[in-house]
Length: 342
Image (cartoon, rainbow, N blue to C red; front, side, top):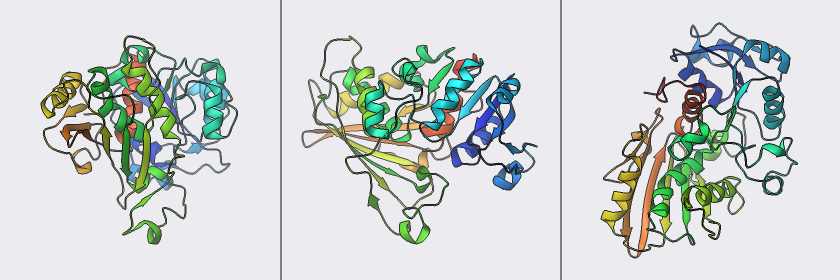
């Protein structure tokens, strides 16, 4: 049994984590953290969990958390998360970090895209990236895991098999993604105010979205198995807000290379994920409802008018956040990877 603490339990990712952990036979939630002085009961924050946990959100010190927990999930804003993670790790608490703080490889890139000096820069580039389908061996038994971003998960899982198989060029990749409104978090914002986003469809973060360097870095690492000297991959990524609660659909375009045919593209996807419990290569373009409320990713590929075209769907709150975090928690602690996720 692993004792678990959750930082940022009041948000959507915290809610989904708690739903999953409520049915996890080897996890006992012992602390829910808030930075506020009030200590509301969990049922006041998430009425959906009434009767599942008899816990209050508390403003505890790191020492108090370390006394109660073996593992912490940190669902905090960037920079604030790394400060907490460093303190927890120094006290022997394992951490799955759902922020972006450990996803990039160096402090300079982090400061460029996030506008802050990194509070724990020594761990950048050394922390396992929590996408088990590609980095399972590094995740097993790790003390700290960088949980992936939601958009990057949808893009990386679709593109990596084709890059590894030599079926697409490393240059000129376009990732066009659409997300439900829950991806913006629970804190009210004008962009996600109902009259603003309902019956509307908008691009945002055009050319500036912080998931772009994450996609670049992980695709460059995951696709270059030979460690040969290749030019780093730089994708053109544009996210869009869709008036639905949850889900991400990414449509991806790449230049074919070698024997890239509709059959070879699908064969590469099927071979890559034949033994993966949560990723499936499907025979027709998938929809977000096909994976809603699951830890699954569906990917489809073909070749159209001289371009490789991929479609990838995930639930942004599950495979894109909390489900992936529990998958990583299972590997970190030596539990079956699929526990509480099927």
